[in-house]
Length: 457
Image (tube, rainbow, N blue to C red):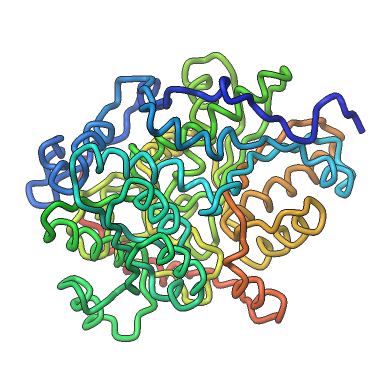
């Protein structure tokens, strides 16, 4: 074992990036524009500003500015937990008997337990700058809601969270962290909104979905004076803020003259993956370097690997803009036995375009295999990973084992998006043998595809 590289590569505070990187500026094929759900024409900043903060609406539509300065107040907050460590998984390498070198960027070193805080604090900052009273949002597993409640508390903003009902019931402690930071948390779909009542009438007893919760949060924001809606994944603005992950990762690797061969991230809506790969993808787009990018998604919610590349609504209630993305249909609701997060029906328009252009690949993994990897990683590396993160761990281990077979000394980097200490119900099901691998059939997926709006752009 070579110890020339430390276990943990820390950047000094003064080495932390002071700008976000906008990968769209280097994309030859830009993501298709968001469409107004009524007119089916590209959304304008003015239209988006009715739902989002104005500055965030501008970031959402900016596809030409490569670098955007991070405001000083956000940098100040980042420095409480950033730069985050890039860890060499020496123990995992030794256990796997692989010649591969494995690194992971650990984003769980803050109270929210995940990377979501990187964008939450930015969105809360712009809301405060605009003079708003508060924001509304949705959350699935709860990491985003937790992060946003922290950010809103910091800026003294009200925070209303609509939490997917199955997660609300399975993860009460995540819910209580949100309430500790002052957020109100409502299980979705609920009786508190018109769209929630409609969904409950059409699907009695539903366990909910992110698409449902988004619809409720948007309705609550639009109908309440002084509020705007914020989102934790999928959107261009979120990938922009999350580029801090990849920029730090690249700076840490460059410090020791390390060039990765494979970069792996879990993929639900795309925030972690998009942020991790951003500067590396920029190099690939500019022809400066080549990398293998792997998006890892659950087999029970396979947007990339089995979805359609088409315009679709971003929410179940069909009140949000239409986005061209890999999607399973806005009405898709994952099986209730799906415990591993990454439940959104679609994928970031940026990542969808990159995947469509063959610049990255995707793999779908079954949840028992994911939890096998999670437990193995916890026992060897000493961190209990979030189920979402464990999708990336699964494929990182698989790639390291391939290197053992071939003798190749590849360098693998993956994103460890957060910790799993609030996900113990899922771990309990796994340990009790109660976890199953649900893979939707083509027939199961067809209704979602049938409901696509048919916008051909």
